[in-house]
Length: 289
Ligand code: FAD
Image (cartoon, rainbow, N blue to C red; front, side, top):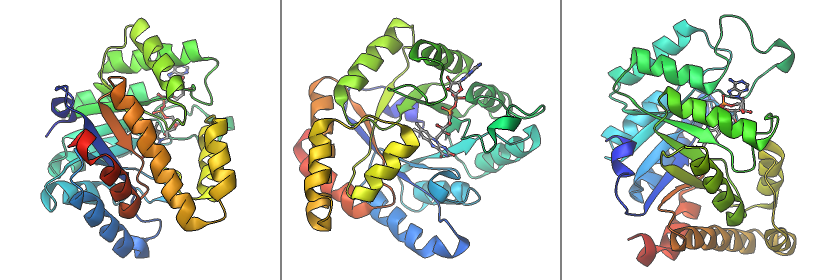
């Protein structure tokens, strides 16, 4: 099923994310995570591409499995930085053959900024969106957006201008980078709409269940951590079970506030952890049922 179809109604949707194994031997634990997360029956599951240390070669097969073996809509991520047109085309043909209908079109992080952009390679996600439309015209295409601005962007206004270019190129919905303060998201959504970006925006929520995870996430994304959440991590961070419970409750609280403010589409960065995903779902059983 196309994700745009899922996002059409006013119903609350909850999507989740898995990443492929970091090494070829890590398959078993990823399969277990995929099975556990699929059993929770989210509206769709997205599969990252080379992010979080995962290898990209398994993205398509995992997305195919989610759809065919577990009967859950899936989305494959695809990055284009450092890729040639030929590599991207090969991936798109493989996706079509696997029956994948949804792609999150991303630039990816630049490995060596001194060499960017290399001639003959893709520069931005918008270029990939155009390529997908050319090679796989029926594909449903999503893109990323950043409530606190992309770390490389000159400023937020420029960043939003480039999001508009991505949407004008054919990106049909956006998923946000994680944020821990919903006010930042509401303000950003207002600015997107003001800029004429009217596609559905899926709010990305990262449950932080370990102190180290927060340090890493903040370092990678540059997200602000509200004092309220900082206090939680400081207080419970050295006690794993308490931290897990507090992190699940914080993420569930963010989701409840989003839904109460009319935001219907939520993506949970489940980080291959079905237990955490289940914890959130259980806290929301009446709200998202
Ligand atoms: P773009 O939309 O191309 O934007 C990148 C930067 O370029 C921004 O600063 C933008 O303002 C600027 N820009 C865009 N167009 C122009 C232009 N014409 N001129 C000048 N500047 C411009 N990474 C992975 O490797 N694998 C994944 O699976 C993955 N999944 C992700 C999922 C989500 C929901 C999110 C939010 C991020 C994900 N990432 C993933 C990380 C992402 O690849 C990085 O954040 C990357 O640095 C930017 O990708 P993008 O698609 O947003 O790029």
